[in-house]
Image (cartoon, rainbow, N blue to C red; front, side):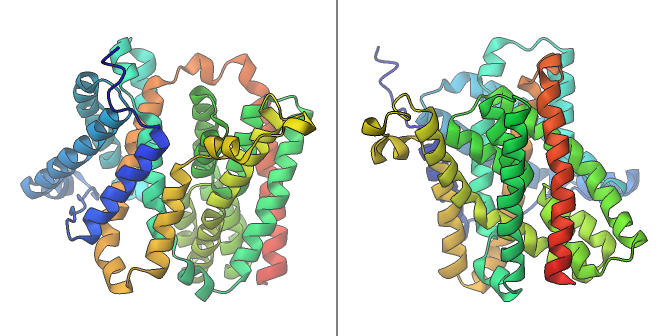
Length: 418
């Protein structure tokens, strides 16, 4: 009994605490230099990535993130010993993914490190029989939610507003129309309710981040979340490769192309990569539109948590016993407060000079936490669960909704940006 009465906070509050701690340390001047992972050939790999100074930076970053991860385990009441043994393995696999993604040819095609993290994790998790203690120590949601809180530091409202209101208008119209269509389609295809919510948000808002936020809002199943994330990452690759060439073939204006890419492609890195293939104006517009959708993430998570509480709570259909504000608050994903708080802090209270000095370190840590999370997702996901016969309907629904998203976003981009 005494073991269970140790410190044990809800994971979402722990994420807010840890995310705030990282941000405060950075603003206080404790900045971790970002490791170099860029290379074109074996000579550069040896001289840059495996240089003694770079390995020291990687080691320093390891010490920092393992301390944060262990603090997270301590605050959530999880055993420290298993985490202490499992985390270095997850970290090494993640570094391998980051090195692969740092290759110039890989970067040219915009393939992000999280894709390789997921693939490496899936291969190891399905080819080897991992012990139960190792799987239990994989804190996937903790890692990815810390990454989401840090993502908020890059969502600067003034930058979005300076680029004009068109990006926000497009983001709002696309999110509402695509979300409702995906929701309606999943219902028609009898996809289960948790997957319906996650698919609708992932397709319409901002891919992986939206799926995670929605899963937190509805307390979703981690295997279903892994499935949706895998679909997002797999479909993002052909979209970011072929959409710029389609735009070029039909001579779409750069502004239209950028708005189309930013509103359709689900991962920020893929948006940047595809926008870069088109030109400077397309890159700028695509980034602004994607950031505009990121702004809607917190609002969407709140609305979804309220909707889910009213429709799924046992008293939800009883007019005399509607869920109280207390119940809604209990179901609300608290880590979203960290995302919103970070965005507000960096938008209105931190000077541009300070942002410029800390953004590199925070961006590096954000990418690392996401990559650690996707390595963990792969390690705990079984191929048979992921691509079994029961997964066909959600997959078809996701692909159809994504097709609808591409067409609708293109139409809206032409109306607003041509």
